[in-house]
Amino acid sequence: MGGKGGGGTDWQTVAGTNAYNAASQGQSWDAIAANQPKYLEASRMGYDKWMEEQAAGSQYEMMMASMMKGMGGGGESGGGEDPYAAAREEARISDLTGKRDAFIGGYFDAANQASNYVTEKISGEKANAALMGVDYTMNDELKNERISNYFSTLWSEGNQQEMEGSFGEIGSGGFEQTIWRGEGVESGPTGEVGEEKAGGAIKAKKKNLMDDEDALGNSTALGA
View 1 (cartoon, helix red, strand yellow):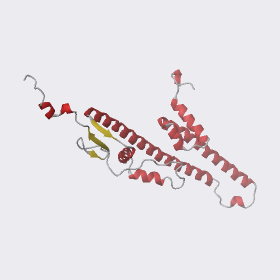
View 2 (view 1 turned 90 degrees about the horizontal axis):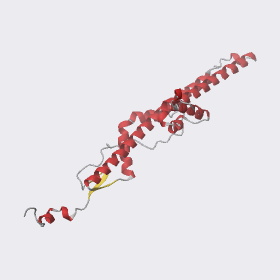
View 3 (view 1 turned 30 degrees about the vertical axis):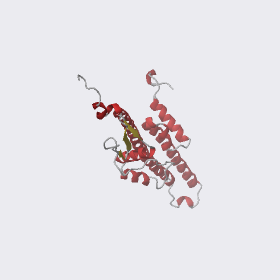
């Protein structure tokens, strides 16, 4: 696909088209967002366009069905039945789905930010430990705990409750939560070298004999 003014591919337009096509094939918003995380705004526009077209089409079909029913005579056409009820209900469900998907998108943003932050921080800690000449160990359990703790600063309890509440009528759309709010504070390993603290085990390496003062004291002093 050509870009604007020959300047390259317009990836925003491509992302919107991809989202529109994916929605037409029955994909949910969270699946589309996961596939195109860098183009969420354009993807949302393509997804919403498809949903709006479906709502408008349903409303037109309901109008035509009501007209045909009235032309057919009989007492049912005057029974007080709302010809737009189904279209309004579909629009309401579409609105609920959009709000739910927005909450899920916010969750993914916070979860990715927390994971990236802690991963980069741990890399820095490992590098510093190497420069200091100390051993540094980290396991998945401690790393995940630190991610959850930092995630708590980005994703509030209120955010969690709102997202879960949005699942009420329409379900989670296949969403599965993998990172939850922690109970601690992300601060990384603390204490002096040689101590073991939550968030990472730091253990002093064995001294080189040549670095020991007693050993150096037995050597010949400079200028002696």
